[in-house]
Image 1 (cartoon, rainbow, N blue to C red):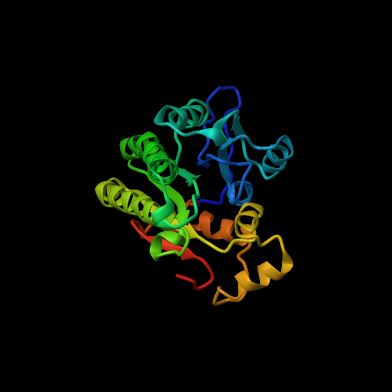
Image 2 (image 1 turned 60 degrees about the horizontal axis):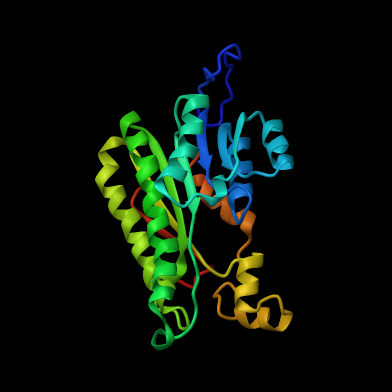
Length: 262
């Protein structure tokens, strides 16, 4: 059966006897999470999601997906938090085939003005959080010899970024961690890839950069070779291609989603 094919299931059991792939979207109320969940549902996936809006759950179910919505899932930070999300999927469906997460804490300013607290904050968001996510989901997929994992980091980790030296450096560390995990589990048919975004048409990015001001936004767009900001939905389509089971010959790769900036 293809990854998109919806098949019958035994509704008399608490665990779905379905051939649908199951995807975990840890943050279904923020950034690319809602749109990624929509795309995967339309492509024939059951879903485990963190803190999805009730209207989104209804929409996902209208596409034929069974949805497990985990309260507090979007606030996962520790291995135990992510394990709780995974366990919700395993309990309902028996297996989770794909999982994605977004993390990161931005601290701006010059290196010479930074503090140990700044470093610790960025380290927790950009390195420790992905570490805990991977620790929770990788063993399950290795055991089943099947899995696709996508970690969202930042294109800032690919080059020095004026005004964000700690963020840029530790995003690079988080990316390299995921690439190393990919090499470790590749023979278990588990893929780990990384997508690094920047210059996104997203409220948090606009607030952080002053892009809510139309004139400032024009200046920001001039820094992007494509001369525009990236859309959240179009980014979600790129995310879904690493999760929907259709592309199984790529792993350990970091892709820049930044309009040619990196």
